[in-house]
Image (cartoon, rainbow, N blue to C red; front, side, top):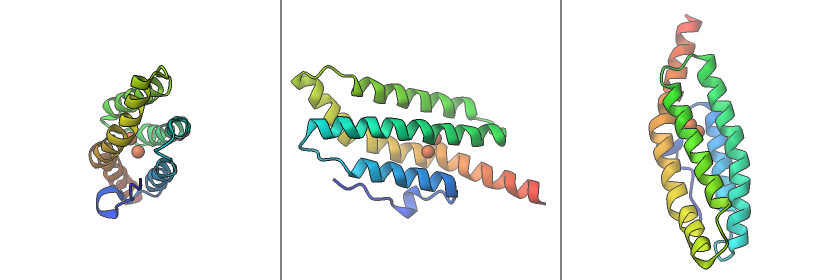
Length: 135
Ligand SMILES: [Fe+2]
Ligand SMILES: [Fe+2]
């Protein structure tokens, strides 16, 4: 399964965020969907990467005093706890199928939705702040 980084949809023209988002998809695409163990390993890898990804975005929010940082940080916390929930899901057949469905359907949907809404807003706000500072 390959989920491509699509410039029109994903590129936010913020060097840090674009790098983090590309790294996320690189890890995501490395999965072998025929193996539950591989899905779980990738989820763990994505969880660790996402912790760092969110920390860096949140640092940026604090630095520029981003007005809707509360909502954005809440959304980050929600996603991390969701990932954690699926990583620790009981390894029954049902649990495995749910984890696989989360990986295939929910995660990429979340990725698109989050970049299009919250992250693109953060990137453009940050750009405007930099312009104000440099004037
Ligand atoms: Fe992001
Ligand atoms: Fe974000």
